[in-house]
Length: 227
Image (cartoon, rainbow, N blue to C red; front, side, top):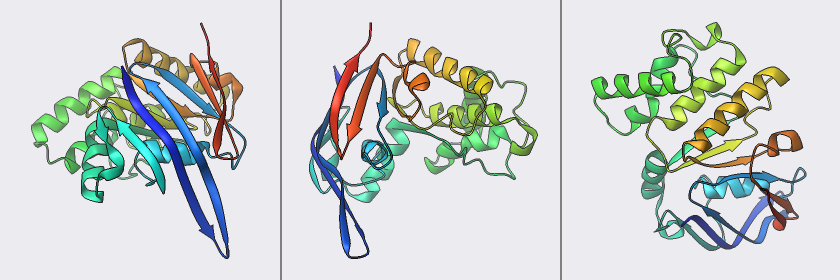
């Protein structure tokens, strides 16, 4: 069953007097439960495509259906609600609030959703335990290693039980040993049925995915499935 159906996606940006076509009729389909790596050189359109998938960028043309919902017809309020309900985000920069501990950072998506405090704390604690940080809930970001901070951000992405996890260079700020730990966590989540789409420039990271989609000049140039 298709979770993501993007067809003929166009996206342009104006830079001064120039118009840059970031996506040129790009199409991509992702099945429920797949783990897909998107690769490409700088300026290839891979990050723009991830932003379109995450509804952070609205395409100029084409169609997008996410989990049965025709996303391109939604207004900003509907898109915000959809993101909070169905999509978890993991970025290279952890985007943790420095004055909030791990538990409070993981609670944030539920705060935006208007969830009760008692429910927030219970679910945030469960999400942190899921990523192996049950003993770090009261720690501030400055008291955590880079890998632990990224695990907090992954717990935050998972806390609303999304149908899709999006990761943009999730190990770009980590050393090689910590990178392996984080990617093993992604592998575990995928084995549990989570759908994951990640952007990476690193072939070693892409090897964790069973499907690698390569972009160039705003379009898909290869789509490789691995056994």
